[in-house]
Structures are given as structure tokens and as C-alpha cells.
Image (cartoon, rainbow, N blue to C red; front, side, top):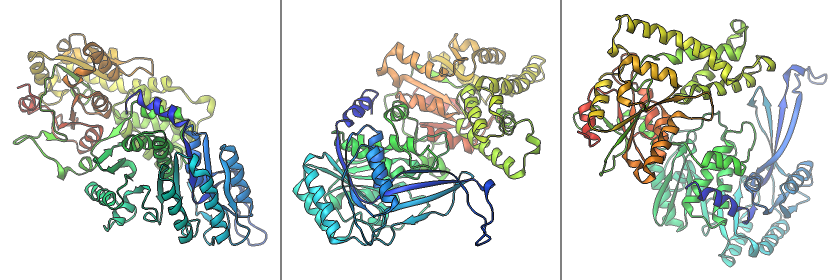
Length: 633
């Protein structure tokens, strides 16, 4: 989905007319503050004081809320509520969403409004209380909902069919009535997302998760276990043949796929830096798919757009979140995809150029004609900053816990250590200033440091950079004294490889997230700065300025997008690999062991494959074979 199509699609969505029928629900969040707890006089048990409560649309209502947030203004709701406070609240929430709720029917007996009561204590969800699990749909209520649907269907572009509860709206009587209505109104695009009744509406398009798809296709799969990609693809193909309608299958962090007449198209998962909460992600996906189809988009566009919407909402913790058009644009105009997660996680799948350590993650184009080579610096050529993670980790821990960090309790300390290590792993390769922006946010969220003492990203960067530069300056001093030489601070054969590329006539670019002045000085000290002929770029004080992206943009600006395939990028981090893949270039991931300066680091192999590397090498020891693999030898 190109940069012009996504804004156009978002504009078209505002004109769509969409109905949602199913198990409308209220999600109730109770924020418990145990500090105010006391023993109950009646039972002696500790109370759970609620500091804050909030209500939001859940189930079918969450699909509707997502549609409204995306800009759909003509929405119709069809479902059942009970004569209870939750039902009153549901109607209020639907009014706030601007939905036509005349299709919401109140059943006076044998029905509780579906609702989930979710106590939250110390940012963790406790045992949930569920209402509506014992409902019984009356025939009169069923007929009233179907009548409301029949009145509205001629005016709708799409209808989302939601099912959450086994004892909800979708009785056999209702299924028969809805199928008859769909047969009479074939123009309406029907999209099914049913937890237990995926086969109840065969004339509709289907959205399923991978577990549901494999089981429906007769396979065996268990919840919360990884399902192999080929099993999911086979299941999707089988279900498409069964229903003869497009099938959308979500794979969690691995993205989704679409099975249709043209075959199976995969949409990769998104690389997300923040913590994620998958609650409601399926509803967001459904809303994105339905909105796109209602606006005239293709099935692949619908899956891609739904993936963006879900990518926004999973980053909103402890809420059934929605995604605004601006948030979708922010994640979708230049998405960071995760490539080949199964290969990245399992080195046993690796294939190599015969007789070498050069792994082929993805086949290279047959007509390679490379003219430009972009290099990351640290960990790709230089090891002067090897161990930066061990410098950054204590800086972050002390910043989050504050001046009294040594007195922090063991549980708190270990939790912060885990948080910091996860953050460093996810952000390896991006500008230091961006990492420090994330640190400032973590400091604020942790609450151990008074708000007026939290530094900005520049302040934390100064602290980290001072610590790191002490390490670098010591190594440069050893180099200048002759105690070390260039081979002690570069990857195996990195300099001969640079020289070979230069002799071959390639223009070399050095792009780093480190401050530009430091990069130039270090490249000069290591003796290869002249090979780049002044094309050395690093980070600036402007946080929005991305050195690596700038280099790629500059090259593309000079050559034009049609020549993007003439670029090859070498890097050990995800940013340079991803940015090159986005633009159609060739990528070589360095899975470098920076301590030894040769050999494979398994965690880096995983990282660069997920970022989109075509080839993976541990170092440049086999640089002659690498030149041949790239069509340069």
C-alpha cells in the first residue's frame, strides 16, 4: 500500500455505510488501589478499593468503536441487551459513538447485557467477572433484530457478523434468518468473525485466527503454541476452497494472510517497540478489513489496512483501544515489518551458498547491478563501541529508579532490569537520542523520580555518552600508542572488503546512529575514512533526523526510485536493513560476534533476518565469496 493509497483509503472510508450485528458488550475496568484496603466488618476479608472506573464498548461494540475511530460515520448496531445498568450504559456508549442503535433490542427476561468486569491491580488484570453467560434468546427478540436488519440492509455497504458468547444472539433460529437475509441482499459485503460458529454463514467472507483456521480445516493445534506457517497456509487454502470466499487469517505478531482465487498473499507482522496487549486486536483487524472492503478496497488492501489498525491498538495497554486515522498513517506510511519469523527463530532452516558461511535468507534478484554500498558502522565494521549495551544498561536502570536506586527492593529492581534489557534489545540500531527519548518515557511511567527531576532525551544522552566515550577514548588511546592495531577494533576482513568494493567502483556511504563527529573521527583513526570520500553521516541533535534514512533518501533522490535495486546495505541492526528493504534495495545482515570480531552471534542472526536481510554473514572473512554472491566478483 503506497504512500498515496493509504490517505486516499482513509478518506474513502468516511463515506462507507457499515452495520455490526452480534454480541454487544460493555468492558468495565476497575483500577484497584490496595493502599486504601481495609478488612470487611462482615467477612474479615480485605476489600478491593476502586480508585477509578471506566467503561468502553466490547465484543461487537468494540468493532463498532474501531470503525467510528477510523472515521466511519454511518454505523448501525444490531443486538440484544437486558433491562439492567449495563444495558443502559451500552446504549449511552453507542450514542456517543454516533451509531444508529434502533437495532438494539431490549429483552425483558432471561437476558443480562453482556459485560466483562476487569479488575486491574498494579498494571495487571485480575480474575474477570463475566455477565451474560446464561442468556436465552426469545423468538420475539430474534424476530425483532432480524426485522431491524432487513430494514437497514438495503442502505449498507458492509455487515460485520460478530459472535462472542455461546449463549448469545446466534441461535439456530437467528442463523437461519440472517442467512436468508444475506441471500436476498447479495450486494452487501458480509464479514464473519465468530468465535464458535465460523461455518454458520457460508456466504460471507471470514476472518479467523490461525488456531481457528487450522482446527476448522481438520488439523490439530493448541492455544498459546506456535503454529507452523505452512499449516496455516494449507488451512487457509482449504477453507477458501470450501467457502469460495476470501479468507483472512491472523497470526498474531506474525501478521496475517489472505486466501482467495489468486492464491495466498502474506502480510508480515509489524515490528513494535512498545509493550503490547493483544486484547481487542482481532476486533481492530475486523474493523480495518470491513472498512476497506466497504470503501471498495481489495482483499489484500483490507488485510494490510487491518494489520495497521491492530498494530496501533495492541500498543494501548489495559483497554480495548481504537486507532485514529492519524495513528494509522503514522504506522502505515512507512511500516516496519517483521520478515520470516520462523527462519529467524530456527537456525536449522538455514540455507547457505555452497561451501561458505553465507546464509541465503531470501533469494537475490537475478539481474543484480550494484553501484552503491551503505554501511552501518558499529558492529558492522568497527568494534570500538563493543559493549555499549553494558554501558547503557546501568545508566537506564539508575535513571528509572532514581538517586536511591541501590535501596530499591529486589522485585522492583529485577523488573526494571528486565524492562531495560528488553528495550535495549528492541531498539538496537536506532539513534541513541531516540533510545533516550524512550528512557525518559520509562522514567516518567515508573514514578520513582519526581516529575520535575525527569530529564529530557538530551539530558539522558549526555549521561550515557559520557560513560560510553570513556570506554571509546581508552580504546583509541591504546590504538594511538601502538598497543592495539586496526584488526583489534574491526570485524574480520572488514577493511579489505571495503577496499575491494572501492576498487570495484562502488560509491561507499557510512551511516550511523552515533554522533556524526564521533563517527568521522573513529573512521579516520581506523584508517578507512578516505574510502568513503566524505560520505560519512551520523546523528544530529535533531531527534527527527535519521542519519541512515537520510543517506537512503539522498541516494534515491540522486538516482530516482527506479534505481533503488542498485543499492546494497550492510548492517548488524534492524534500522538500516528495514529502511533499505522498504526502498527495494539489497541487504546483507552482519550477525557479528563483536567480542571475538569473527564468528556468528545467534541473536543478531535472528534480528537481521526479521528486519529483512537477504544474506546473513558472521563477518567478512569470506569476502571474496560474498563479492561473487553479490555479482561483484
